[in-house]
Length: 348
Image (cartoon, rainbow, N blue to C red):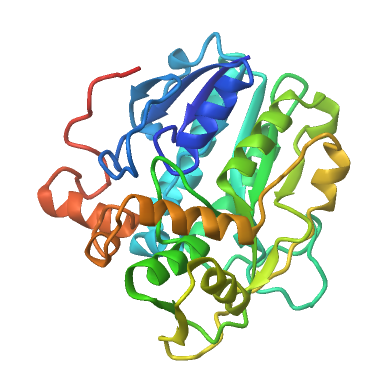
């Protein structure tokens, strides 16, 4: 398929683009390059990319594409709270605008990167599946809920969206992030010898490696339309639900010679949910998600050590998205709507 991959220069996009190309697809990336220079080692993208804000895509940009894989977004809860209005504009309004343009251009498939965070605070110890009530607690999660609703309304015989409710991502990427839970705990371990937990450690989190997200993206694109049309899928592995304190112990074992400390108020985080991934396994029986938190923690710890990441670098804007946006705003490279003053040239 000929695929437009939005957010191609991001944490997940940098891995997904390569996996799509390796699967034989013709990929064009699109990204506003807010995180240019926030790299872990050299990066040689496997696809061409267009420097453009997702809010500016027009129908005229889309003819000839068979599918859109839409990853571009303000990408986590802290950034969402920076500006709930911009979160709605980018994560919801721009998503719906892009989908309408794709539909008008004759694009048949639309894979939307949604999130398990929309489950919010589960009121049960049972695993929640895709039929569970949605209880978004943040602007980010709310934007994903509303985007799914709007995309479902656009679905018809010619336009087929599918919703990837990704668990919390982790793992190494050319555009590494250290502001997501397993990666963050690993960074504290490597740079300080202390693994800092900012809650009481009891909240549950479902996890998924960034490479497994990419593998699921390929599988959903290639699946028979009738299997995935307008359907939500929790994306992750059946055994990959953990309490935060369990993740801290996993990181301690991977890093060695570390201690776990509770550095926050000790209050429980209201976001807590355990997720079932059975629907994905039933729909795509040949899909193999191969990563575990244990293996991923070792991968991240090893990568941080190989690249000599220091506490100063960890606490800089290089690997933390909200800090990076603050830096660009302070330099005047972004305006108040998070639009770039100038884009880099188009690249291979």
